[in-house]
Image (cartoon, rainbow, N blue to C red; front, side, top):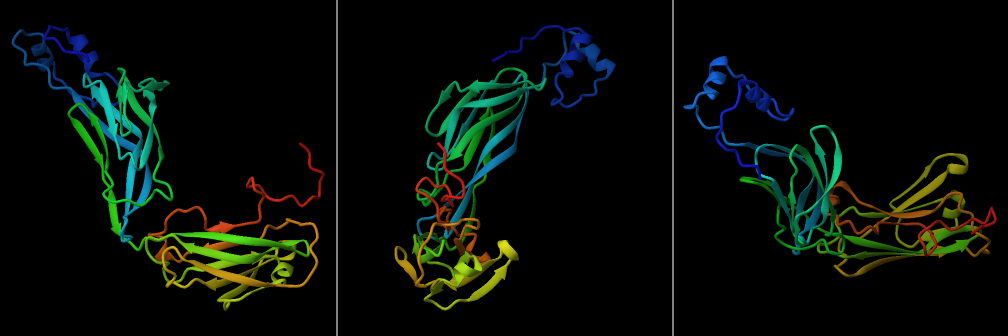
Length: 325
């Protein structure tokens, strides 16, 4: 830390000091005031100016265990630093259940030069950086740890930034919602060169019930749709596109009374046709359709859609070209 020692300075040096960096406010100083700075009776220098601003942030969403609340928690990914002769350490602390942060950050100096800064101290829920002089921006690195299924817990802690005596807390934004989530599983069957769904399962993972209006949509080619018939009543049946891109999309509703942990299953009656090699010019899909009222409380399970893919997650080959290693 740089400590100021009382000493006389010339008028030119004082003007140069006042002009340091674009982030420092421009000060209008009269000739009389500058002359007074050369006097032994001049007043002591003002306290260092310290300010931090969060320019960009990322947000993680968690839900209360009772299923009636949602909290959005922020982490700073770009911090503007304005400190002339101020503190040299900056600490970011967070909720370790929500974030995992790196002990490295990218910094920018007044000349626009970027470099990587390693923390002087770090724990599972905080990191402290020793800030070099002339630093104007700091970009901490973090990723969300509270991903499904670890996204439900109570009393999330706000992220805090400390820079000397200046503290900034990123507010936790909590709202009342009906928290819920689902996992979609589809069994695909090859019929007449096309994959079609034979069984669709939707598991309610809670913590609340499935909201009213949730539907499951299967989208197939018109000829593929003719090969299957869902057992529940179809709530909509529509065609989209023309020619080779034409698809037929059908929907059926999901009972909101499905208890947490239970599975709602739909079986499809399949046409009695032979199976040939698949052609995936158009990949069929099954998707959970969530109404607007269900979005605020919807957990990000990552399992709201399905398509026939290989075990590696890539689309199945249609064997139109020889495979090569």
